[in-house]
Amino acid sequence: MTTYGPFAETTPRGQTGWIDERRRPIAEHVRAVLGKLDGTSRFTYTLWRGSNPESIVVTRDDDAETFIQAAGSAEAMTVEARLRGEDGDHHLYTIGRRQAADAGTEETVLVPIGPDRSVRVLLREIFTADEAAEIFAAFVRTDTVPDAYARRELDLSVAQSEPR
Image (cartoon, rainbow, N blue to C red; front, side):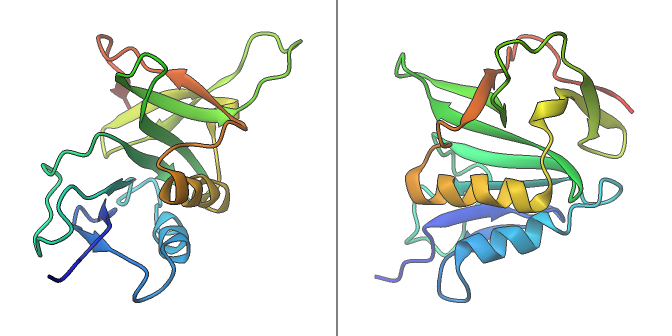
């Protein structure tokens, strides 16, 4: 049996397919793709462990329990991950740097996620493509985000984006 995965992606151009280590290391591939996000015509990138790497075809409907995604530009992007929580259920989190204990009110930033929409995140939740690539690489190795990063759970009952 041929294996095509193990990871699937949806590129900034909206193409979905398999990625693996045969062409180049996944971490290098992800860094290159994240570097193409420009915040004007290329906004998002998503990666997940494919549910059936023996199928030549993969679609975004091949529901993975966990995934990681980025949106914005190579200079300023937000990273979200759907991970299993301590309660055993899956939750969507925005990933950020840990906040100092004495930090006051936090500044927010709008990050473009499409031609007409943006998402508001905390300043400490903004990464460059290089920084985000490290988080993606850890996800590829471990199926989670390192504990060194903060996770802010998103309330999906509330709209997460706003007009640009």
